[in-house]
Image 1 (cartoon, one colour):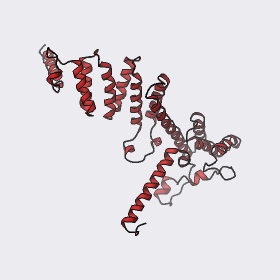
Image 2: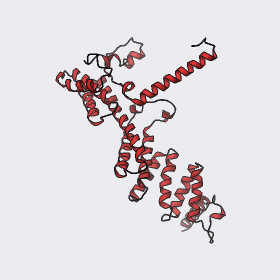
Image 3: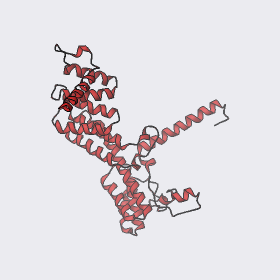
Image 4: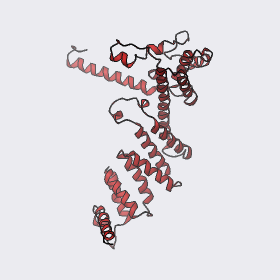
Amino acid sequence: MWLIRTLNYIFLLIVLSSCAWLSEDVEDDQGMVTERDFYEKIQESLSANNWSLAISNLQLLESQFPFGNYAEQGQLELIYAHYKTNDYESSIAAADRFIRLHPQHKNVDYAFYVKGLSQIAQSEGFLDNYMPTDASMRDIGDARLAFTTLSELIENYPDSPYAFDARQRLISIRNRMARAEIHVANYYFTRGAYMAAANRGKYVVENFQQTPAVPDGLAVMIQAYKLLSLDDLIENPLQILNKNYPEHPSLNDDGTFNFDHAVANSNGGILDRLSLGLIQRENPPKFDSREIFDKPTIEGKKQKRNEKNETSSILNRITFGVVN
């Protein structure tokens, strides 16, 4: 019994110490902390971007007032606070819990939205905010989960204030998923798995229409069918490529397919590069036409070019023309 009494005493001290930051004006006539004033203090922490303190007290609010007037709103704010501290797993878990407990809540769409944002953030690399990286080269498992979450948001709550942004993010995720399939197809070319490559290209064409990866999907099919000596299957994707993407780099001026283009632009194998060309291996085909068809890639390249020109101009002025 002494152990139980000791534990209860420790627990009471922890609860009291957690509330120590509250001033005397948050107590009612009996000297007890009111839910409303407790919640208002939490709002001060959120407004000050003191996310850690807000999280601690939001959790305490729920434990002390589980059925109070601010319980559900506190749970929603806990989802966001976890997201702001980059604790995406906790944010997703809190969102799932809210959706499960309050499926008819008027703001349940917000839980879906922040959950989707957290899943997108999990799919991104640490260096994405500091340097340009190719997110489509990484595992896209979390991106697929985010796609499912945001799709569910739009389907169930089309008039949600978060629906527009969710649609824009879905476009980006879909483009990334399609490009990841092309990367896999390029890998299959390196392994000599031409039918697997063709199937990946076909999957992009059939399931990711209107994405910038479609022209490469068609080119993958054409190249793979040629390597498989399935010339009778080449005509249809070649016609589509010519009609819709005549500027694809694999097409010759007369509309024929340049089967050597993808090989010539694959930049050699790792052994070839490491040995400075002393060890040469046959280059597998590789397709990546984002600089032609992918708007973000085009804009990024243009921005990089402008920055380079601006730097050159500054150096030119500083050195009085010595450095052009």
